[in-house]
Image (cartoon, rainbow, N blue to C red; front, top):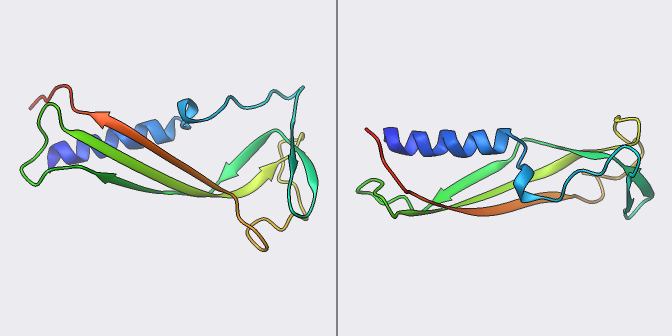
Length: 115
Protein backbone atom coordinates (compact mmCIF):
# COMPACT_ATOMS: atom_id res chain seq x y z
CA UNK A 1 0.00 0.00 0.00
CA UNK A 2 2.88 2.38 0.79
CA UNK A 3 4.30 1.93 -2.73
CA UNK A 4 0.86 2.68 -4.20
CA UNK A 5 0.70 5.88 -2.16
CA UNK A 6 4.18 6.88 -3.40
CA UNK A 7 3.05 6.43 -7.02
CA UNK A 8 -0.05 8.53 -6.36
CA UNK A 9 2.07 11.19 -4.69
CA UNK A 10 4.46 11.34 -7.66
CA UNK A 11 1.57 11.62 -10.11
CA UNK A 12 -0.08 14.29 -7.98
CA UNK A 13 3.20 16.21 -7.99
CA UNK A 14 3.27 16.13 -11.78
CA UNK A 15 -0.30 17.40 -11.91
CA UNK A 16 0.49 20.13 -9.38
CA UNK A 17 3.34 21.32 -11.60
CA UNK A 18 0.71 22.21 -14.16
CA UNK A 19 1.02 19.34 -16.61
CA UNK A 20 3.39 21.54 -18.55
CA UNK A 21 4.67 18.65 -20.64
CA UNK A 22 1.17 17.56 -21.74
CA UNK A 23 0.15 20.63 -23.68
CA UNK A 24 1.42 23.40 -25.83
CA UNK A 25 3.16 26.29 -24.13
CA UNK A 26 0.87 29.04 -22.94
CA UNK A 27 0.65 31.97 -25.34
CA UNK A 28 2.58 35.06 -24.30
CA UNK A 29 0.81 38.22 -23.18
CA UNK A 30 1.83 39.86 -26.46
CA UNK A 31 0.25 37.08 -28.51
CA UNK A 32 -3.15 36.01 -27.10
CA UNK A 33 -4.88 32.92 -28.41
CA UNK A 34 -8.03 33.67 -30.44
CA UNK A 35 -10.80 31.19 -29.58
CA UNK A 36 -13.94 30.80 -31.65
CA UNK A 37 -16.53 29.57 -29.15
CA UNK A 38 -20.23 28.84 -29.77
CA UNK A 39 -21.29 32.23 -28.38
CA UNK A 40 -18.29 34.51 -29.04
CA UNK A 41 -14.81 34.90 -30.42
CA UNK A 42 -12.44 35.88 -27.62
CA UNK A 43 -8.76 36.54 -27.03
CA UNK A 44 -7.48 34.34 -24.21
CA UNK A 45 -4.15 34.28 -22.42
CA UNK A 46 -4.79 31.25 -20.19
CA UNK A 47 -7.32 28.73 -18.93
CA UNK A 48 -8.62 28.06 -15.43
CA UNK A 49 -9.50 24.40 -14.85
CA UNK A 50 -11.60 22.95 -12.05
CA UNK A 51 -10.28 20.09 -9.94
CA UNK A 52 -10.02 16.99 -12.03
CA UNK A 53 -10.23 13.24 -11.72
CA UNK A 54 -7.41 10.76 -12.06
CA UNK A 55 -7.47 7.00 -12.49
CA UNK A 56 -4.37 4.80 -12.34
CA UNK A 57 -4.60 1.28 -13.78
CA UNK A 58 -2.15 -1.58 -13.97
CA UNK A 59 -1.32 -1.95 -10.27
CA UNK A 60 -1.08 -5.69 -9.63
CA UNK A 61 -2.66 -7.14 -6.50
CA UNK A 62 0.74 -8.61 -5.59
CA UNK A 63 2.32 -5.16 -5.49
CA UNK A 64 4.59 -3.14 -7.73
CA UNK A 65 7.73 -4.68 -9.21
CA UNK A 66 10.35 -3.30 -11.57
CA UNK A 67 8.87 -3.32 -15.07
CA UNK A 68 5.25 -2.79 -13.98
CA UNK A 69 3.47 -0.49 -16.44
CA UNK A 70 0.96 1.97 -14.99
CA UNK A 71 -1.53 3.91 -17.10
CA UNK A 72 -2.83 7.19 -15.72
CA UNK A 73 -5.94 8.90 -17.09
CA UNK A 74 -6.83 12.49 -16.14
CA UNK A 75 -9.85 14.71 -16.85
CA UNK A 76 -10.87 18.20 -15.73
CA UNK A 77 -13.48 20.73 -16.83
CA UNK A 78 -12.51 24.28 -17.68
CA UNK A 79 -14.04 26.73 -15.22
CA UNK A 80 -12.97 29.99 -16.90
CA UNK A 81 -11.22 31.38 -19.92
CA UNK A 82 -8.92 34.21 -18.86
CA UNK A 83 -8.64 37.28 -21.05
CA UNK A 84 -5.74 39.58 -21.79
CA UNK A 85 -6.20 41.22 -18.36
CA UNK A 86 -5.83 37.76 -16.73
CA UNK A 87 -9.44 37.93 -15.45
CA UNK A 88 -12.30 35.58 -16.41
CA UNK A 89 -14.07 36.62 -19.61
CA UNK A 90 -17.72 37.24 -18.62
CA UNK A 91 -20.80 36.42 -20.66
CA UNK A 92 -19.64 33.14 -22.17
CA UNK A 93 -21.96 30.16 -21.99
CA UNK A 94 -19.12 28.05 -20.64
CA UNK A 95 -20.45 25.29 -18.34
CA UNK A 96 -24.02 26.47 -19.00
CA UNK A 97 -24.57 25.84 -22.72
CA UNK A 98 -21.33 24.00 -23.52
CA UNK A 99 -18.30 22.52 -21.78
CA UNK A 100 -14.57 22.45 -22.49
CA UNK A 101 -12.64 19.53 -21.04
CA UNK A 102 -8.95 18.76 -20.58
CA UNK A 103 -8.00 15.09 -20.87
CA UNK A 104 -4.65 13.36 -20.60
CA UNK A 105 -3.21 9.86 -20.57
CA UNK A 106 0.32 8.98 -19.70
CA UNK A 107 2.28 5.81 -19.06
CA UNK A 108 4.69 5.21 -16.22
CA UNK A 109 7.07 2.27 -15.88
CA UNK A 110 8.47 1.23 -12.52
CA UNK A 111 12.27 1.36 -12.92
CA UNK A 112 13.32 0.90 -9.31
CA UNK A 113 11.83 0.26 -5.88
CA UNK A 114 13.28 1.35 -2.55
CA UNK A 115 12.00 0.14 0.75
